[in-house]
Image (tube, rainbow, N blue to C red; front, side, top):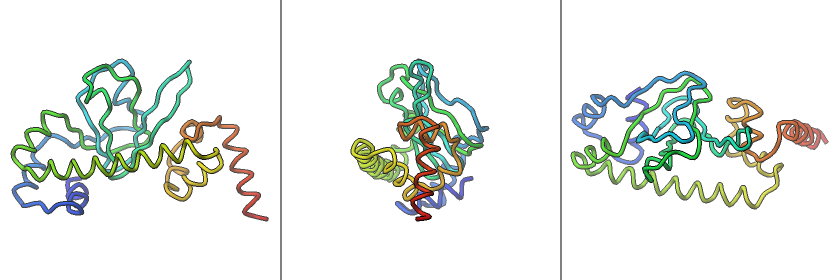
Length: 193
């Protein structure tokens, strides 16, 4: 588990053996079963998650219906808004596959930043990348049809099509599962023509 994390970090900063030892000694690694709810609406939490292996999603339940807002897979992280605002969560976070995660909180991060300032630089760079990616994804979603969203997902995140249940994918795309089935059939028909 640690090596996966170290390989990812090494793309941004180099780690000394001491830094690796300290990271390994922290109780941050969790193996989580598929379907585990990590955060519920109304719950307070200090935990942020980084996916080493697996998939987690964030979603709302509106009028009894799940509305998926994001999927996080390998080398992606989520810090729920409630961690930052210190208010109860407005949404859920759950695993969609058996997953290996790192779990951190602001206190642990502050301690790490104090001991190893380059981790703060790493977190800043990752936050900037995430913010830019989220803005592009939001703009793409707002300015595209469901078919364009699906085609974009096929291009940018094809793994989700195999890894995520159809009803969650449909919700993520802003359509009903039946509409997703029809949309897939249309795209398949077009590709045969």
